[in-house]
Structures are given as structure tokens and as C-alpha cells.
Image 1 (cartoon, rainbow, N blue to C red):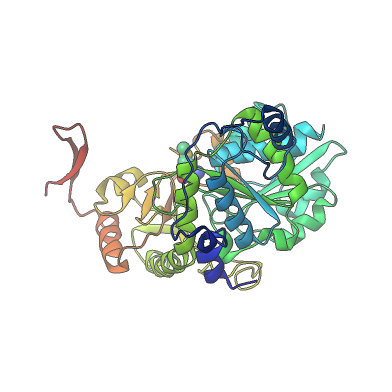
Image 2: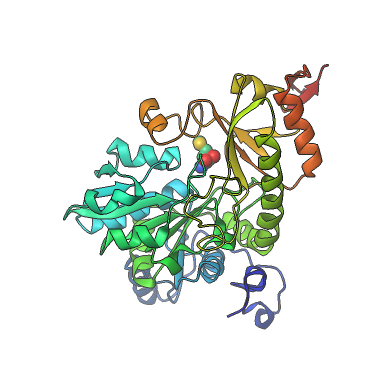
Length: 407
Ligand code: MET
């Protein structure tokens, strides 16, 4: 077992020297020659039943070696036997619900809010044929019924940075598997499987990729659960494109450095925002009151690089005045991103329920990137202080849009 930074660089690459290559091989095949069709059929059968690999991948929807390498690397970082990658984080959480609830014939979910708005909507909408009871973390046991197939939690929570004690929730869930969305913490700061989580979920689009150019999801878990997820991925076609697998795997090498650097910036921005007259509430686990159960330093290696805050002024006006910081959903990219959850990421969560879960309508979410903290602060301070530097989006002749500073 190597240490985190070493595993991040070398995971899933163990055989590269034997192959005589240095960079990750990228296999874009959609189909694979099977001159022995009976052997091809056996491989197809094995994969359809959930095998991690077979004699031939047969077809790209069944298996891809580039994606499998990324999965192996992510599993090593999360400390699980296996991982299964998907075309998006939503495809990943869908497969977990299908495995734990639909396949297991237990169509009830217990979930702790807040969750990413897309996950919340998936669980509430009935689209997957499950019904969901929302409970607070300390009341999970009371909400469980004989047909509960899954407990869903996210810590730190999207978007308000609430933390919950994973080991305590797992204990309250008893025999019911718990899925922990670990997107905000990444395996650099937290390994929920070591605390008893059955499934560790990531929107790989965020920190794992890290550059805002690849959409993906991944679930780290035991091999038996991974086999079910692979079966589901094959029949639902929720696969990750191999180029995505390649980019995500490449992203893992710098994951610890990116998370540590962005976290330092987030701690500093949170501290300065908390003292800014244009700011109301600031949420970050590094701030007083941000970690009431003392989970940073025990469950989590650090407070993470996402923070949230309210503004004295209309949040939309503040966002519109930012020049350097990117006003966009998503997080975990090299650039700092800010968004208004009630308008965007949590738009599909009914307003009253969103408010009740600790996500005020005027909350802004900020994901610290890798820029110099002083430049970020200058941008935030100017936007919060209402300085009238206007920007507008000018379509260029090529149809691309450029920011133009006007005043
Ligand atoms: C379409 S909403 C964007 C999704 C992403 N999970 C986020 O929290 O920013």
C-alpha cells in the first residue's frame, strides 16, 4: 500500500512499464474482433453477469480497458476492492438506486438533505419507482422500514457544506447499505468506505477530472456490489466514454495537489468573506460553527475547497459583477466557480423543502480554484462592494462569446 500522492500518480498504471509505454493507453474501439464466436459469446455472457473483465471486451458498452484502468486507480484511492464508472454522476447514482432498491426489491429510500439537487429530484420524482423519506442524520433509524433498500447522504453537503458523521449514520442504518456522495471531499480528504459506507459516489466531472472538460461518475464499492453495477451499466448503456476514462485517470495524478491548494484558498476566502460588510452568512467547515461535531481532522482530512455565503445585496447582482470568477454550475475545476443554488443546481428542489434543509434562497456556492487568492479576493471584494465594473457577453464572429470589460 503506497501513500495517497503516490497512489494518485501510479494507481492503475502498474503494467505500463511491461507494456513499454509511459502514458495511459487509450482504446477507442466500439467493437472487438472475435474470430472464435463461441468464445466471444462466453465473454459476453461473463460481462453481462457482472465480471470485471473477460477474454474479450466484445463491445464498448460491455467493457473498456481504458475505463477499467481509471476504475482501478479510483478504487485504490478510496480503499475499495472495485469501482464502476458511468457517463455522469447522475448515471452513477441512478445505478446505485437500481442495484440497492430495484434489483433488491426494496423500493424505499431514506435520504438526508441537503443533497445535490439532481439527486434530490431523482429520489423525489418517482422516476425510478422508489419512494423517499427524508430524515435528519440522527433520525435515520426511525425512517427505515422493512422495504428500505438504501440510505443516501452527502458530506460535505451540496450546496451548504453541512457535515455528517458517516460512521454514526452507517450504525443507524443497520443492515441497509449507505451511499455517501464524496464529490466535495474527494478521496484526498475522506474515505467513506473505511467508515462503513457500502457505496462511495463521485461526480467525477468535478475534482477527479479537475479541468471542467469531462463528464463522468464513479462508484467505489466491494466487488459483489460492483458486479451488480456493471450488469446495470451494460443493460442501461450508462457507460463512460473511454476518452472520459483517460482524462479522469490523468486527472487523478494531480488530485491531491489540486485539492490541497484549492482548500488553502477556500479557507482564506471563507475567513475574509466572514469579515466583509457585504456578506451575511458564510458556510465552510473551517469557520467557527462550521463543524459542530468536530469531523474535520477525524472523519475528514481537511475542510475542503467549496464554501457558501449569502450577500446583503441581491446575489444575482453580485454574481453579475464578477469579472475573474466564473459564474457557472459545477465545481472542482482549476478555475473558481460561483453559482446560485436556488436558481440552478437546486432549482428542482421545492423551495420550502430546500429552505427547511438549510439552503436559503439567497445562498451562493463558491468552488475555489487554483488562481492566486489575492486576485480572487480582489474580484469578490469589488463585486460585493458594488463597484460598478460592468461586463457584458459579446458574441464574436466565430459565435464564441467573450467577456468585455466596459467600465
Ligand atoms: C445542472 S446542475 C450542475 C451539477 C453539479 N452537480 C453541481 O452541483 O454544480
